[in-house]
Image 1: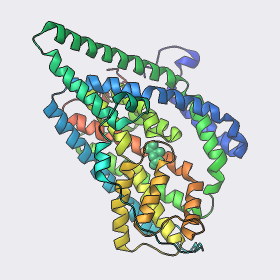
Image 2 (image 1 turned 90 degrees about the horizontal axis):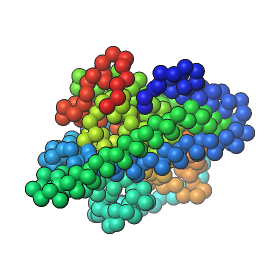
Image 3 (image 1 turned 120 degrees about the vertical axis):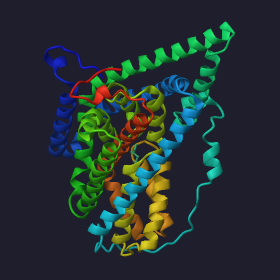
Image 4 (image 1 turned 135 degrees about the vertical axis):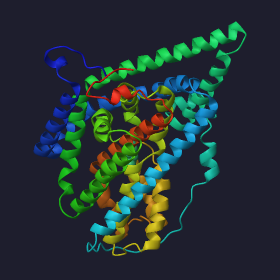
Length: 429
Ligand code: ASP
């Protein structure tokens, strides 16, 4: 977002105001405890405003983005992006398993309950693929279904790029008008996001205060270890994997993190990759200088399928739960966790708490179904008790990962303005 040169409140950089909101929120949350709950609507207000922008910004940006690149190039970008997303997610699950083996969270907790073993239900691949095609694109838009909307917007954008070149003036002019209108509407959405970000400090304050106030105390005790292990894994992935990948592709990671910060922080407090999407797209455009042809596709896709933080969290929590019920996972079972956690994270919706639901799938795959009265249910309940705290970190990693991969893909396609990465300047596209 453009920071204006004004004095007083509006002259003070937004990012500092957000940082203050975060700090004050943590302190107030600790002091007030559960009594902080009445400020929740303030956080909801901020998140709802962001949500308002998600579908329009995805649709209009992607129509224009898809029209700006050739279909062949589009396919290449698509394949590269998915491969990158998958590889980083695999690395995340490996990190999760490695540190969980090292610290063994939950071991010795010996939770008791009845044992239940149940069959594992596999999701049908054909349904997943068919679900990508919107039967009714307007319904997909109205219901906020990002993947079918991506497919529709790419098709519309590609058709427009062909129509624009047609010899019949009526058609080429009409196509050009549709593109200009889409472009204008995308600009409108970016403007709205910049206004919404002006109230971010208050939203951030409320969101963090409520989480700290209601869940903070539970992190003490045995859950402290699991929280520490999850966050350690997230930090390793954040700095080593993304930092390393950015370096390999010739970026200075120290330039990336501060520029990605608005999105990382918004994800941290909103606990929603989808909710953060309007901010993530704004950051890609205004802070990282990435071409719309890239980010309008990679970011909505990433917010839906690329969940490195979630995958890492699921691996650690599966290990914690297995340890806590006295059935530590052998190497074969850990392999299973690896595969199911990657798949489960891909299937996790970018909304708060979704990763904890998909964790059920991972647990089932290793014969630890969550059934009422079992020790597994007890251990799972413990994790749910601190889920918001874990969700903040994993969502922040999910979103930051989308931006890191998007920067790299943009560089390999020569679709990034590297002036944005020089010095401390914050240029605008
Ligand atoms: N909250 C996460 C996200 O939006 C998903 C999860 O619960 O792991 O990325």
